[in-house]
Length: 209
Image (cartoon, rainbow, N blue to C red; front, side, top):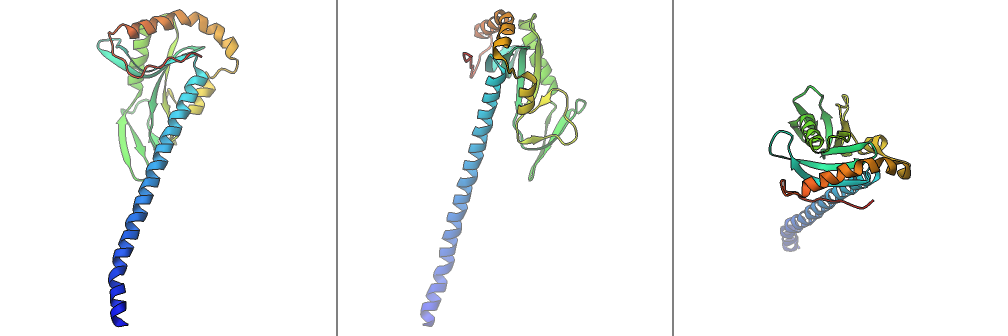
């Protein structure tokens, strides 16, 4: 009987180890799946918002810079108020930043990091668009997705998905379409400029709305 017990004790650690490995693998796969689903949901929500506020849009657009070289724009949206440049920031955690701070900080549960104040880059992108379409109002927003929280005040031009819809959404698309007619020639001019080959593009999207 003692021999049998000793044999069983020798097998138990191996069985427990195998069980732990399988459980750990399953937890890792579950975490990866949840992360993937979260990213897909955020991306889908962003596209829904862009379509809700815009009559046309371009994504990952590269155009000549106002000074020299080229500059990339995450999203350029044709709205009833003019053109809207949107820079997207996908961070998770509490964000500390202000108009006068050179670096902004993100603090999450197990990570802390800084990134450069995104406002100057947005101003450069707005200036680049204005250089091409001088007779159309051009503004911009820095869009933080749902994982970000500003607990010490929100800097200028920063918004969430809901705030973007509240500010630029149009309940009456038919009435807004009349305003769009005045902007269409300038929008088409921008499209031609992007197609000239002076600046390579990636991921251009121009849905018919």
